[in-house]
Length: 336
Image: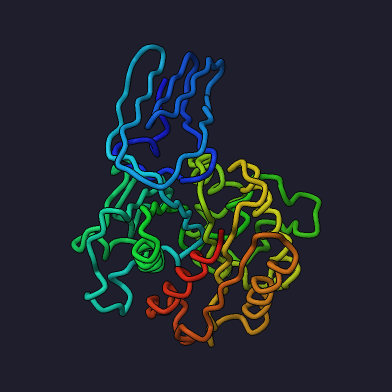
């Protein structure tokens, strides 16, 4: 038996929610952390053990016994965990932005867990690195929006913050949905007809239906989190995918499925609206932006974060991320 890679020294667990410890294999599992205990016997290829909520705080030691073999995890905190999900503007690194280095700060209460990647180019951290603490020397290699928002939020709330990456540049939303989800629906568009054929062929290596959902997202489920931050849409702005209803239909399905996988019916989703882009598809770009603004009107606990008034419009990767991150941090503070 073994633990999921999320469970290692330095992990941030979601406070004030039922949380789950999980892994692979069959047998008996016991978990104890700060007086909270749970145990059960499992048959099959995977196991999930559910534990009662715990308030903010740390550091704690977690003891996990699998088939009589004990593993002890140190420096565990209960804080707020955010999933950074989407494509390149969320993956965009702090060192590539125009953020002044005075904002590069060491914050041991801000930690990053990076998921496995199909395309490793441009990434600096991987699952085997565990939970990486924010240090002035390494944050330049973090997601700019993720680090800046997480740091502001952590200092404002005095909570430990865990960021889990779940992004891939140039990825279509279809890749983040289970394979077959759109078959026979109004959102069913043949792969060869999608916008990917207008872009570099290599992007299709990770944009097939269900590919990133299975390879990346499912490996963090059902970890308890506070909020999903979704920043995606650029790859779905070309014909024939350039309609508001089409993107909104896919996003609605993604939200419902991810909520089910993470075992929280009304898990908050923050949808970051695409910034304006003067070189984008004249119909598709505003259509996706419109969908991102309208989706909160149709689903509970879904929020739209406007970016157009804060970001440059002449670069598909606007280098100004600080103001957007501060707006994001403020919104995250308001979500209960």
